[in-house]
Amino acid sequence: MPRGDAGAAVVESTMVMALVSVLFACLLQLGLALHLRGTLVDCVGEGARFGALADRTPADGAARARELIAGSLPDAYAADVTAAEVRAGGLDVVEVTAVVPVPLVGWLGGGSMAVRGHGLVEVLP
Image 1 (cartoon, one colour):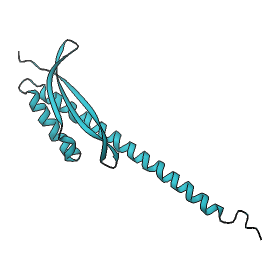
Image 2 (cartoon, helix red, strand yellow):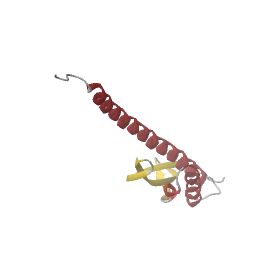
Image 3 (cartoon, helix red, strand yellow):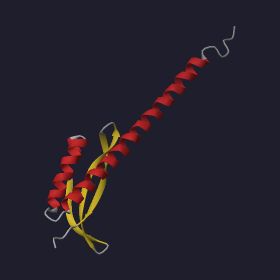
Image 4 (cartoon, one colour):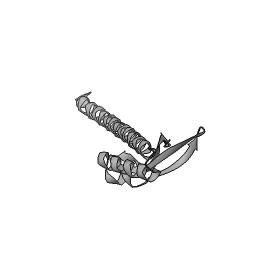
């Protein structure tokens, strides 16, 4: 006696659930990467504005960015933060740069991403 389609629904639902699970994991990972980038943009921007104050130096801005990153993300993301005074568009600005690993699986990274923040240098009158 031929079995026909008996048991096909179980196999089909298993394959669909596996595909949906992979897509869901990819969306979660994309959300984590976007959260990481947004948090870093905010931290280096705040560090650059802090380092651009009249009574501060770019090194103070890098230290502030490291402090903010370490308070928001795993400590490894605060390891490579640099700051320098550069000229952009005819203006002196403090540029804070953070180079961090891009998370591929959870917080484990594969490549790297550089995020820069700028603050206009204040001059005492």
